Image (tube, rainbow, N blue to C red):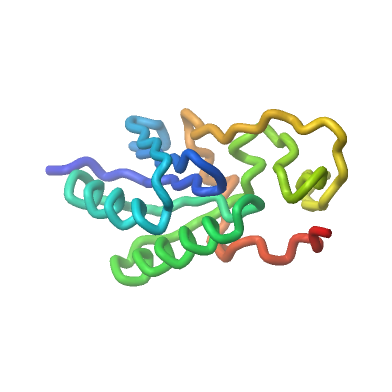
Length: 153
């Protein structure tokens, strides 16, 4: 019988990362530089043959809004079609709360629980990491992308 797992998708920037979690612990990682619109269906299909998927998790922003929208539409569709819960949290959970590039010298920052834009002269090196242990309490069933972030301009 296949293992029951949760899947976590980080599609905010390249490379796209997928974590496979068994009992909250990371057991397998997929990293790809392919476009999320091309590779998400392939990855999901392969993993659904290999595992029983219990829950879907993803980073709902900020980051590349197009990549986030694609991930949301795909994962929400799979959630509905296969009756798998979809949960989300913001990108800061995956980069130790570091600023995230918006446009030009503007970066998204998280102060308390509020996400704002802030001008930074020195661009921090930001990378997103799959956590070794998935903290379910950090995720919400309100999984829509974070569109309500302040205007970038």
